[in-house]
Length: 228
Length: 356
Image (cartoon, rainbow over all chains, first blue to last red; front, side):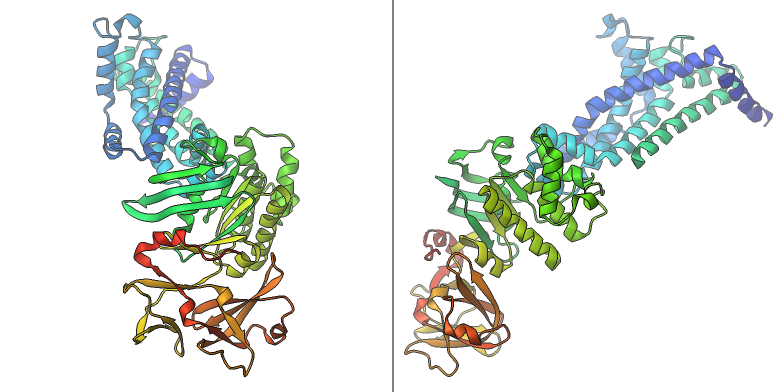
């Protein structure tokens, strides 16, 4: 059990000592997860609004598909994105394999169903009178969507946090699409996997704690924002 | 030019027809009351007039022009206060300013919001900064009205504005709505169960029943059941002791509704015998309401559960003896009712009773 305590000490040393390798992995994680979150919110919020607000034929079936995609395995997304981005794949010419944007594409696919499904639920659970109220005050289509989402902001924030949690902690996509290249595409989770393989438990635990710390910082910021 | 013109409107929810109107016109600058039981289609009609809902069939012309779906242009000169007025999760100020902001009209926003809050009796210095959840039911309803008044709409649609609010709030809301009418010539359409108020302010009253227009004016509706009294007469029980007697309708139908025009009712003086051929009902005066356009008085008399409104000219000697709680006798002619077939109510909208 000694190495657990060792891990804690190591984590402090790495963070406070400014270990460049650790900071490279932290920066890669933060960057790639930010790209993925921005993209999935940009695409997912309008889709979630449409799915939760509008009544159209096939809506239930669409909802079923999105709910199923909530349990997409990360290695499967990794495999798909790898297949598309590899030299022989249809998007091979873009040269995105083993790059951070490549990982971000995979993580966007991972986060998208979470954002869409939970946004749809949040919008659906809004008061039925909200639509009439917004329209009766003169909102157009775009304002109707914007302000319905704003009214559902607490539920949507929960959706975003949930998606962020998945994106931050996944290892399958980062490993397969990113390739765990030191100084380049090594994220915290792939680094942990590597350190564990090497038998460097303390280092792995240290990195795990750093990941938790980042998650805490994000959640604390969001909860502070929510109070306002 | 009519403000609104409705042509063969049908609205359905889940394949159930909730509103069916052959034709209805509302004039610019008018105050129209919508009267009818819960579920008679008042709310649906108001949502259609506010263009927040589209009819399943038919056409609504606003300013003689059709309005494309979700088009904000026409909607922005109309303000609807829904029955369940919903406040956005923002401060009272942001709620009232919302309509101005979606119109991108931020000139003198502060003064205009403060002014409308003052109209509904919510002093801006106390209320503007409050969050949406820190209001009582009556205050929330008034804040919602302020959010409509700030827009200075050409048309203000009010769905039971004074239901479930306290008396003081109701008074403030009524005054604010009339203020809009007088100040900016706003046309009002008001759905309400507050008949004395409607009779006091409205230039026209539309009766709705089961999604259809049953007539216009201040008539009292008698829904039956009607039972045979003698070969030529039918009667409907009013409470335990009273009844309304009418001449049998020509067509034999099961579901018939009778309407009687207030102008056909007369109040009898104490001890006065009814004229030849007229029947008498005994009831209790419940209210006296001023009819602003004529300056006359409406004496509302409850006979059992049904209320009849009898007009009296101002200064009529009988008024001295009339006050709520006093007994009153109404004389009427059994042949003076108008019959409506509840199954064919669409016909009713074309045969209007004499308007006021």
